[in-house]
Image (cartoon, rainbow, N blue to C red):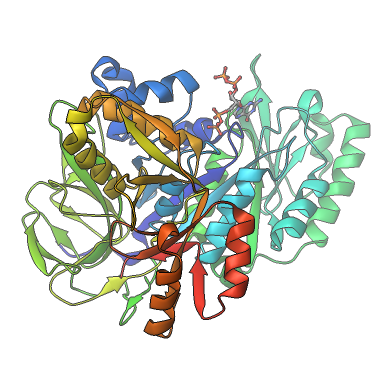
Amino acid sequence: MSAPAPNARRTFAIISHPDAGKTTLTEKLLLFGGAIHLAGEVRARGNNRRARSDWMKIEQQRGISVTSSVMTFERGGITFNLLDTPGHEDFSEDTYRTLTAVDSAVMVIDAARGIEAQTRKLFEVCRLRDVPIITFVNKVDREGRDPFALLDEIADQLALDVVPLTWPVGMGGQFRGLYDLRAHTLTLPEGDSRTSGRVVPLTGIDDPALAEFVPADELATFCEQAELALGGYAELDPDLYRKGALTPVLFGSALKDFGVGDLIAALAAYAPPPRVQHATPRDVTPDEPAVTGFVFKVQANMNPQHRDRIAFFRVCSGRFRRGMKLKQVATGKMIAINSPIFFFAADREIADEAFPGDIIGIPNHGVLRVGDTLTEGEALTFTGIPNFAPEILRRVRLGDPTKSKQLRTALTDMAEEGVTQLFRPMIGSQWIVGVVGQLQLEVLISRLDAEYKVDAGIEPSPFDTARWIAADEPAALKSFVDQHKSAMAEDRDGAPVFMARDQWELNYTAQRETAVRFTATRERA
Ligand code: G4P
């Protein structure tokens, strides 16, 4: 079999603030996509709740999704790989890494709320990586803000050009349907629940037939708006979109099925197929014959009965086949990949082959780590898969001192997964755990108990924030480290980390020590 056309994959994520409707939209996309393969995670949540480990309980109690998963659907000859990202404000590190493995993103905005804190944060990550974004303004079946105000907000706050592709005819109680500004069709609400129904073809916004569906006074408003929408925005320039400078905007209602098909069509038409991936010493294009890829996430104990560990691997080039031997570039080890999996149903499926843009799970015993590059032999390292400086630093207090070995194993495991970061102070023996959000600590304690049978608690550490440090002159670095020994630690890769009592101390130190660079992210060398 020959490799499929490179444009046959769309690997994307949905970014949003909690409650904007990401889960609802995900479900609808999968339904629209027809061939539904739900990721192990999603299904397992329903089928296998009791067997799940304790940390999943946190997720259930709080009604949030802590783990990411992969969902695949097909439509019109294109395979869509949707990488789910946790929506909670607190737990974003994992989300950031997931965004390193996508080629584009869909930004969901609540029509009544506009851009929210988490939307903006995730958008910034996308911008850093030039990930192009299609915007879906959700919940137009409810009372929302004026569409122009929403478009202005996106344009102003995110410094993006906006191009509306559809337009809501009224919102909330006066929602009469969704108008396609290019195809000139009106999708009408139908039945008591007013879900999307008949699609009426029209000749344009001045088609007299519109009066059948929209009361006269509302029609005047709509025509005025649609005229402005058609004339007042730039043309959709696919290049600008792919460079991340422009966002096509679709209005819709995930709950009522409005705009979901349009979104899939827009992804198919505009979203980039697998992109060139940045690496050192050279970038990698998807049509290269040799297999390359990177690990963007590791998850231990997905199934507590098996104590397995799955590395989520994004294929960047070549045609991957089961049984291949790939080189872990960081260590030079060759690893035979005999049981790669696709995350389809609750009983994962063996992946016999995979193409650029696909995500496969590689079961392993802790060898593979986040940021790892695998190749057929070439010494390449994919870049842009960072660790983030923790905003919370804590010590772990052990209930039973005889369990210190288990604690160490567990902390190391979870640092490898990226659940928490682990810092070993230069002075003293108590390790310090670093997280970006409070929820990560709860996940840590809960998993220590459930998976490692270690009773532990969290206690304050003398430090509040941390930065990786580097300097052009080794002597400058050494001198800084010597002067600040009591505030120095190493991360799990042995890289030096400066810990500060508070932001003020950090800024003060950084201002004085001009020969040293303080960085909030670090990539594996
Ligand atoms: P999230 O994953 O982004 O956090 O959002 P989620 O899909 O869970 O949606 C959050 C709430 O918004 C849910 O209501 C959901 O039903 C509602 N919602 C999503 N899309 C739409 C839409 O297009 N129109 C309207 N009117 N509501 C929408 P909830 O009351 O919190 O949950 P539930 O009781 O409905 O499950």
